[in-house]
Image (cartoon, rainbow, N blue to C red):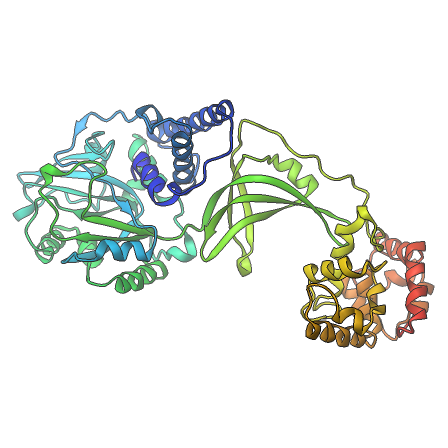
Length: 556
């Protein structure tokens, strides 16, 4: 698609309500200049070489973000921000571009009161004008800036799917459509866009590479000043060899029907990649009045992107129950499917440092299994590279069994782990609940909560009396949990396979096992066996074991 128009439309539907960055004017100018230079480099590679160095989705989102910043800091969207479009062949009828509906509700509002509407898949490719004179293909013009484009005639004549001769009403006609990458059984939801737009653009601009032209199709979506009545136009197009248009152009009256068809095309095998659905009036104005950005008789409702570009607001560090420090990127919120994503894990401190991510960077995020946000890649680094210092690595598997000021994060991570389903399964007690309990009672170590009385729990600020009573009952039930669960709660560094292989086990029997005996269990090598023995005999563990024995916990 026409990249700069695409970015501008995206601004109106996605970034118009975005919050402006809290930057000084100097910082804003620096960041705008840096991103503008990056987009210019991408544009030059795309338009002059036919090479896409970044996916269309990423380009559109970052171009929209640049435009947002320019508006925030007093710079209008000027020609200087647009790609260098060098086409000099005038379109007989201008390309209008397609405005975007941000939601089903917005589309319904646009459809209200309009009649004779039709819907088509929004084919993901590059736009082209075809000009037929006296029954022959006289000219093919790239979209360019909508008014002028490049002469693609020679390249288009090499595309088998584009009819070179037509007759009847088409003999002297102007058509607008999409050149696309022909795909067999392409299911959009499963396969995504596959950068189809860039592949076709590259094929049109590389003069010596004709291989992809045989895999290029044409979808005609407009016949300015063509026959009246959509049925007549579709019949003529189909007879001339533009069969896909008739096949994938359907009448529609209600927005619910659009929603249903949009979902169907997203999940059905098609011969092309798509990025949404288009609804158009069958009665547009005469072609002479068409202008870029003013096609008010047509609208698109795009699919939610499989991935989003998000700005990193901050870098956060958290200490897990084992002492491992994890890094999380706090993001300007983005929408992925039905999820509002505000943070994403970057893994360990070492990985974060290798990724070189700082606040202000733009990263791509998507949804992994179970809808968990996933970091994909850095798409652009800000000019200002101020990164926070990670915490000192003083945490480990034997630290923070007690609630000291420097230990609270790991301490609560340990508590959250022991109340989880994998360990004691204390229903209704997560991290926030543990923090509430500790704030009220300031218990000392990992198991001190076992001594809390019914009265204390029922009078805990932030808890109802009923919730306090329920917790008291659940804490009492914990006393009867199997020994192996208590070992898990302590955080013994035993592999899962070794845990399952343990039989008739007690603390005494575990502490008496040698490194060699541990190695005999599945999943335990020499180094792991050494770690297990060292952990079992650590003074920090010994103190807790003696305390649990005093409480008459089974196995200690």
